[in-house]
Image (cartoon, rainbow, N blue to C red; front, side, top):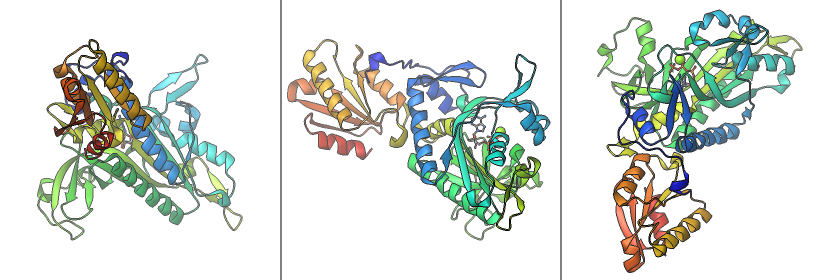
Length: 426
Ligand code: ATP
Ligand code: MG
């Protein structure tokens, strides 16, 4: 894409309201703009990153055998009465009325809607297990929306719900989802921990959270330095334990010592058991021909929160350093004097078209500005590789390669292989 054709309103300074790095950088890089408290518009650059994360999540969910659906955001009160959550959810549930004075809410989660569909349409254990997912906007009237899209009121979530005939089958789906979430975070390229957690307003038997480790994380987790053991200290606080006494103590699993870390919760997986199925009377016939209450699991990933979490783990004083997997563009061609020098403009466009043909997503900075402005913006928005077409091209038909990590090299413009190898190593 041409920079001059894109809406990328970058800012020199972060607006005052932005308290943490990811919020500051998302505003400065022109990725998002606030509409109301906890409610944001995703501008083109932000949306590209969001879509890349969405694609990774969708591909891994599909590979696990889950099926995609799309449920409504507006949900009738009656369904929420069945689980007593119309009252129980409190003010986080945004209630609205239609023109006939009927009560509805904006979906903060979708257990009720999906359970209603399954109880009406699935009759036998032979049709199970089922794992149904969607990637959709949620609304939660958070008491303290903050940190931009990290804790928004309107946000994008991948939520899935499994329906199983017994506990054993639920355990299998749960483990499959656990593995799927690991794959998602590994493909994005984030450092994370899986910790035992409090099940909160969703409830159920047990749950685990996926935490991206970052200093600005809202959660405090106790992790072992030499095993996978991790627990959200929220759980310990509930039991009156003292977190500070944990530091440096042997890990409860007998491996290594405990360290206290900050984490951003990006995923949460629950074994719900019969919780919702019982109150909503969701049964199927089992192998003995008897009605049997379904077992359920639910599994959420904060798709929009992952954008902020990825930034919190990957930035420097110049801006964002995107992992390749989710960068808005792979390569930025910085064309110096694009508007004045035909030779530079046509070499830049040829290179741009060639790289696009090879399947790369490429930005061509064709603005009138000089090198300083262009490289600063590119570093702010975090593109992994810059190719600078300027004086060197006019003199020797060479371009300068500059990685977001600062590494650089000068190569003939025709040496595409070296250019791409340089990119791959970033
Ligand atoms: P939290 O403790 O952060 O409020 P939660 O336990 O309420 O999270 P879940 O109901 O498990 O969250 O939702 C699944 C995922 O959706 C979370 O792991 C998180 O990544 C994301 N999420 C939840 N609330 C928000 C929010 N207000 N803004 C952005 N993402 C959110
Ligand atoms: Mg919450």
